[in-house]
Image (tube, rainbow, N blue to C red; front, top):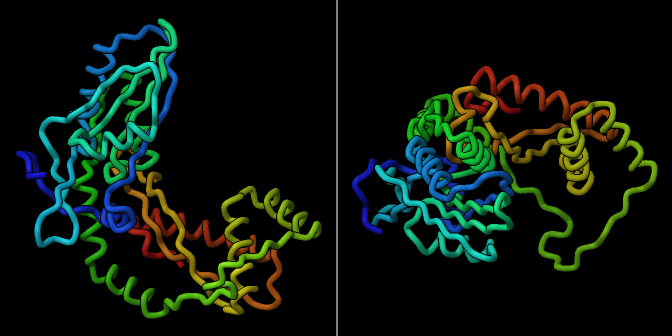
Length: 300
């Protein structure tokens, strides 16, 4: 695909990670029911306003000879493919979007005069879960409100953080102490099944109720299992950070989530209750560090 007349930017850190994973094949889709008066002309016009006011919804990705990653091409005009059919096929709609130059595809199935089923498809390099929700919210309200921060600005900010002395020092330290864990079943196609004892299941349930933080409790269980399997007293796993808690990023259209290492120190005397308590504290520190630094490199 040749470059258009829009503005060209390097991919963000998040987009590069997705490109390495699937080559830009991922498609985000939302299947929703709409009840009430329906006018295809008005609904399409409302969606066009949203697309024009959010540059991620009108961004193409162009591969350039000599470059490892494609570039973002923010076009002046968004392209929306709109169809109305008796049935909606999610896989087919995703395939059609991949094969086309469209930015967004919309398929509408009329269930009744005041009842429609609508499928919205958008490229994975342009969206995450919060982005899809943003698109639907702005489309349903009809306001087409502009995003507080453009995705190109967000991408530039991420690159500045990554290349800052603090950022480079942090990730260099992470790489220096990172050694892949050797699990007992690595390379073994025959995987066993393990059942939790009734007593251990009760302890997990009690921890869940005590700390009111299911994610932290499950994190504690997982890292406790890693310690039991590997014997390593310190491990690190990747933790998904949405970054949507920052006000300036709440309404940004585009993938902003990242993964950061969360380290864990264990020991023979550490029981599951202590593990859950430690995980909750670390998650609290992670959120506090995120608010202070905003680059999330203070996770430990």
